[in-house]
Length: 259
Image 1: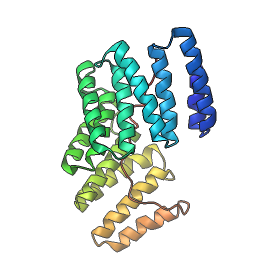
Image 2: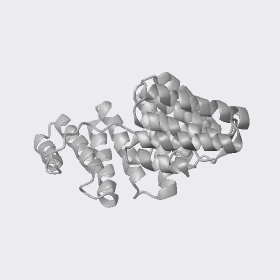
Image 3: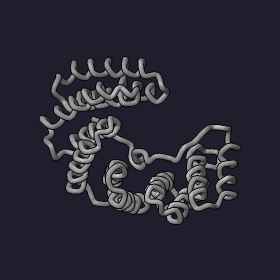
């Protein structure tokens, strides 16, 4: 209960209160189950998540590593809970800019998930998506391939008209943009926009970000009037400044640090 309140406080942006509730939950959990228990590891991972949200990556890594070590000792390396903690460590390495370590850990997580779960499971899609984000800094073609695989799973589960599909298409469009494949980027942005308009509404910030991406692509194609029309639509949405949207971790599956 205490850790659930901690999660709510983190989502509200009150990190100090969130940490207080999580530390209290950790103390109660240790008192009930002892220091070496998967429930203790679950709370440790949640504390790590709060520190990540605060961008205190050193402390985030420390808590996620504690959780991973405990799960590994109790459940073994091939357990999905252990893999979840390992994926959280990979997230921190990615945020620190250590793409090689992040990629190595995500790849290990994917191997476990594909063995234990079906290949069309949403957890597999989320890890493929995260691998694609890392690869965007290393190999654009490989990144596109992973995004495509992730997208296929998400569409198979949710159907085409879903926010996660729009998110993934927007990320894929940035790959084509980076490859200077402007026509493909524009087409992919448009697919993302059509879904986002439908499921999020035209006033949503994700819609504005996609419109900005389309404007930047039109500009590269020399179609200045169409570029300005997209930029004008974005500016009309409240004056907020935008840049070409960066791929982000997959929303298709919430990270679960459950017990």
